[in-house]
View 1 (tube, helix red, strand yellow):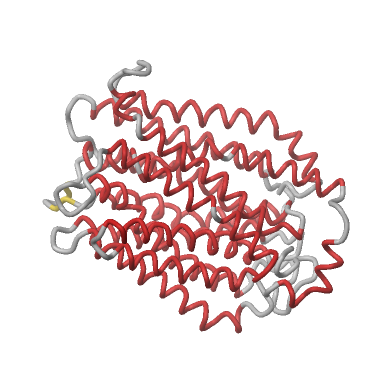
View 2: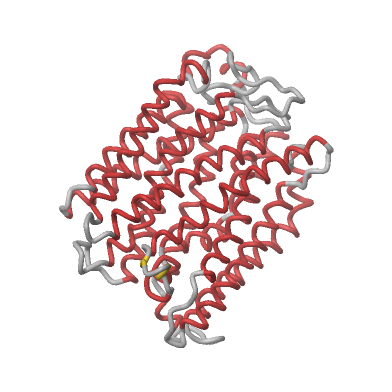
Length: 460
């Protein structure tokens, strides 16, 4: 059951009007998510580098082992939101689940700040548990701000997604600086991530009553309304929408499998094969991951305005069309990686512009898929399963994270030609993602008419 049914709007929720201004609660959720992503992406930017480091207090694992572990960590961080969404739907509401998650995440980062192997494992465990409670519920609360059919929804999720990337940008810069600095070190970076999460929680607790009244309350506070909504089996239209949503969720796996190379194989590429000297200063390899967030911060308002303007004119592309475009952009980004890797295989450090070009195209693809997908979940989900299905959206990402880590772990084998040979070297490895992304784009285009029929008018 949803914590605050969209069909029966809580006090303070945004009305469905033609006014383009977004509800104030969106910007509070923007800020809370920003700080949580500061902590998550700040730690993520340095995790494989810390695990593979043997000179400055890291764990000293091989790059292959570090990549596999990174994939497992990503799997659990995105799989547990299924459980977190279920608990919120049935028992405690999205507000409480989000707060519990944030406190657990902060505790995990502070454990990681302690230089001891048991604390490393405990810290990561707490971070993934906290993410399971936090991640699906803050996104669901954004959906609860709108009635069904409100044309501002996709734009709102794009603005919300910009908050994700503001946090990620500064988290990667701050934690990357501390982690790769000889003066500070990895554990100071983990501690900085925990401080960021506490900032987000403090902001939410201070302002939630003013800007989110009635949003995300526990189920027992709206028992009568929920009983009406949850009585009986799903209707045929709800089953159709659910089927379409599940197919789309499945088709996002190739996107994130490729996109999440940023934290592993592309991170090692930045550290070992990229010339990072600017005006005599060697900047941290992890800083290149912030390109994705920086480009998104600049372009997200343009995409939000575009979707809103097209919606008002009745010309907005369908969700499958947007996602197919995302796959094409992702494939284009990996073309940059193929070309850059081909040059680096000659034994020279290549320009960071190869990574920058790849990250920029990946970002444009992300804007056509991720915030649109979050919005789609709130449009197509039966009301009593909203948070659970938001968790399932993230579970698909968890599968992608696992696959991404496993693929990154065979970078060396592919580069040595042990599995296949096309161009030679790491160029062959990155060509895997050109191919998988292009095939996913074709699949989405082929299935688009079938999917749109089953969305029953909720495809934009």
